[in-house]
Each structure stands twice: as C-alpha cells, then as structure tokens.
Image 1: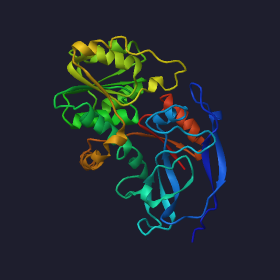
Image 2: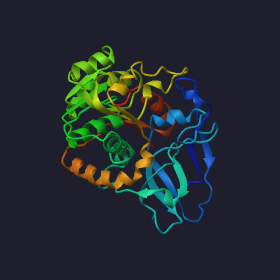
Image 3: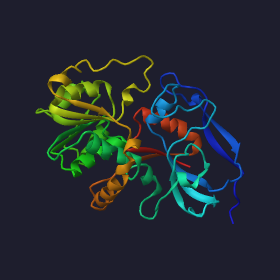
Length: 336
C-alpha cells in the first residue's frame, strides 16, 4: 500500500513580473499537507497546464479573475490520480481534472474535481483539445463570432493550442476558407497539415500584407489570439458585417506601457463590424455540446492537437515563459 505523503512541492509567485516574467519571479517550495477534511480528496498531479491568461493574473489589477497573491502558490488546470479520499463520490484510483495545478499534490473538495477517462484519451487531452482549449475555440467561433457555413475565417496565433483547435473546428463547421498566422516556417507548415487553406509567417513582413495576400477578397470572421497589429490587419480586411471573437492579446501581455489601439478602428462603423470579447467560463453551458461534437471529430480524424511537454515541477516557470515566447506548437504542458 502506498504511503500517503505528508509534504509536497509547489510553485509560488515570488514577485510580480515587470514586463516579461523571469525565473526569479517564481519560487519552488516544500510545504506540509494537512489532514483531509470531509468530502475532500488528495490528488497526485501527473500533468499541468501553463496558459497565456495566467500572465494577467500575475499583475495586481482588477480583472475577470482574481490576481495571484505574491508568496502564495499559483493555480491552473491539472490532471492527476486520487490517492486518498474522504468522499464517496470520488474513489481512490480515479483520474480527475481540477484547477489546483503548479503543485505535485493537491487537496481539494471532491466537488471541485471532474473524473476523466484516461483510457479513452490521454490525461493531457483533457487540458487541451478535450478541455478548456477546445471549448474556447468552439464557443469563440459559434456563440461569439456566430460563424456561418461558407465564411472565410482568419485565426491569429494559429499554431498555439487554441489556434490549432479554432482552425480545425472552423473547417468542421463548414468554413469556406480558413487562414492562419504563425511565427515560424515550421509552424506555418504544421497548420497547413491540420487543414488551414492559407497560412503565413507574421515575422516575414507586415501582417496586413500577409493577410491580404491570403484573403484577397476579405474575411468574414477573425478569431483573435494576438491583438495588436493582427487585430488592426483584420479590421482592414473584414467585409461588411464581419465579426471578431476577441479571445486573447498575447502580443501585449508583457507590455510595460499601454499599447496603442488599432489605428483603423473607425472602419468598424462603416463596415458594421462586431468586435466581441469573451471568457470561456461564461459558456460552460456549451461544454456538453462541444464534447459530443469533439468526440465525433476526433474519431473521424478531423480534430487533433499538438502538445509540447516539459518535465518536472521545477521547470514549470520556464515552460510558462517559453510558452509566452511562442516556443510551443499546440498546448504547452508540464509532466510531474
């Protein structure tokens, strides 16, 4: 019988980053594990996610989710094995998805964890294409941008986790043409393999030039993961009644000064554009709908997602920094 651990390691926020995060902004620490309370479980985490939204939580500003506290452990999506339980609803040996990542062991209420079937799909998939990543792409296209069959869809950051999913889901939903931008020739080649009709390297020249060459007749939907010059280019190429799903602005997350807004925003008036931001948590009611479609698309080979792994809790901060710098193709994950 495996002995229940009394201590664990976790990553705490040592200081708030100024601009680009550095490894000294994080601290690995060993802490005691308390006794389990009623309806609580102890999970040995096996894989955790690092995501762009976490950068915003490192700033002490009001947002849609509370900022991380300096000196306290970070959190985020993780999957692990239940090794102790005081709940009849979640048995020892179960694999669960939960929000207490950035640590090797987590104690949490059983109600805060969802049992997943790692026989049907690897644990990491529930943090990516079968989890929040895939759902984000789905709701951004359907509920937010209201994509229609035949639409020309442009996705920025198309080689990232959400970007890969968005392009494939747009294709599965009947898009007439899917265009993506990425930051290297290899990434451009990869998203073409995943079904993007056109793709360009945004580092080769102005984004507007790359987008216009890929979509000479304009676009109907822009799924924005990047912001900045990508958003400005998309506004320029959107057709009448075009729609923008504003999912992220990773180009601005490390900015130390307020970035300028799109210089051509006034075009939204004459074009009757809709620019709509969204947070995936507000669309939890679509999760079951998405899972059903995703299972069908996965089985039919129409949906897949790359994964980039780092190993060891101590390497999670660097994995996060690398992800913000575009070192990943698909989902960036840390195996524990």
